[in-house]
Amino acid sequence: MKKIFSEVDHINDVTEVIMSPEFDIALNKCVYSNYAEIRLHRHDYIEIAYVSNGKGIHVQNDRSFKVSKGNIFITNNDDIHSFFPYDTRNSGKLAVYNCILRSSLLDTIDIKDVDYINVKNFLSCESTMSINEAMYRYKLSGSLLNQVESILVMMFMEFNMNMLAGKFNLILLLYQLLTCMYRIFIYGRQEQVTYNINKLDFVNEVINYLKANYSSRITLDDIAKHTLLSKNYLITIFREIMNTTIFNYLTDVRIERACEMLAMPEQKIGNVSACVGYNDNSYFVKVFKNVMGITPSEYRDNALKGSLASAGAGDGNNV
Image 1 (spheres, helix red, strand yellow):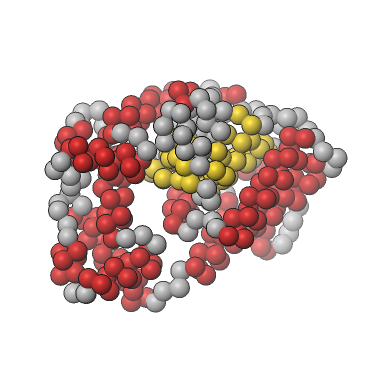
Image 2 (spheres, rainbow, N blue to C red):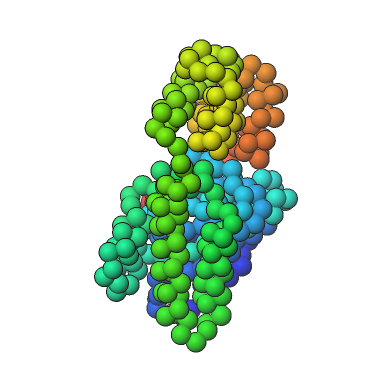
């Protein structure tokens, strides 16, 4: 089996990623030591990315995720994406295992089992964002984390060491990985979220209120009056279901909207700050950097570079 790449700093240009002519799958480990050459990119492969160490940011289409060990993502054909360290030195020691495969590979695995058909359909869905957002909320931990990581490490070794019967074993390991991910996203999520419908309704009401009013000053009293619930009960059920606090969630909503506005060159940072509920621009910059790992100005620079890169990717020359 032809070795494509092993441990690398980054994938600089997706046109350089060449799949094996023998088998449409490749494994790598990115350690992100050359920040200047990291780019948003897209390709015609399915990619499974697992954060094995450190902290950073994962950008996929119009969403940004603050990531650490245990986060796992799927990117599908033509998703614009990349991981970024928190800073140019990668002081957070971000490292990511990537398994990339052509969707056609799934059809060559001759398994007629109904569960495998479900797994294949799950992985090949047109939009992976709802899956990734769910998985981001319920990050891998414990035995499940160890299981996924051990499978990826074994796949990495098989791919890069040309071991006897490595191609056959890669297929078996890929099947294990896909089955494990199917359980994580479908069944594991259901097992972890054990709430009743009334609590969910209340939390959805809070979320809708935050999304409708994020540009204004919001207090816990305001939310309690709106939902007609006690403040203590609100705090408890929101954390129970969302695995975060109300105001951490509000911060995420505000920063997500700020990221959208920062991608518009005509929007001044001071205006963005005010529009997402921060009257103090210095405080906005501090919060933004705490969430995203970079300043609003740096994010804007990266977003504009990404826009140029994705515009260039549309000419049909990239793979």
